[in-house]
Image 1 (tube, rainbow, N blue to C red):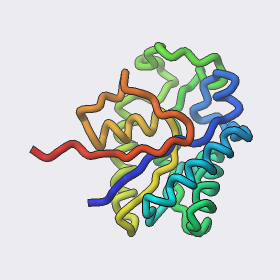
Image 2: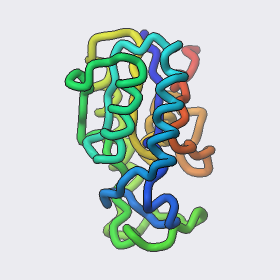
Image 3: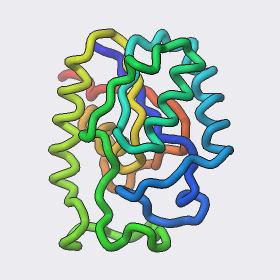
Image 4: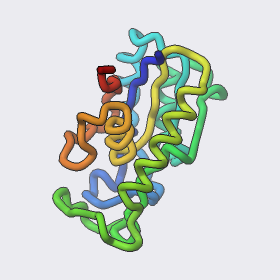
Length: 175
């Protein structure tokens, strides 16, 4: 069974501005680049065999910074649109509201759609050669991946991932 690590991209301009930025491209800040570099230094001890990431710029840049730190070839980073951030619809670019329940808004990607995408993403990740894989993606996508891997951790109300911190995705224990 593969060991999976998840890392949310580094801090972005829209994170700093406190705005929703699901499918909106937003650049990493210098702090975000520094966070990614520190995460890369920490990842040296994880024996990463493969790096996969979202196709969105902030995730790609974060993955490339980590790859440089651990000596992983940039041209071997696997990218997939399955790992892009949740579509927040008309909330994109508006002030972030942490307690807003997004279910029921017609233009927001539903939790069910996000979950189905996370299931497909994990199947794809499992097909990549290597025993230890780092997934670089986004907050809501990461929380759903964590929920799919361990259903005892809810998607809603679960702790959020900080920027550029690496977490092991631990599977639900078999009964």
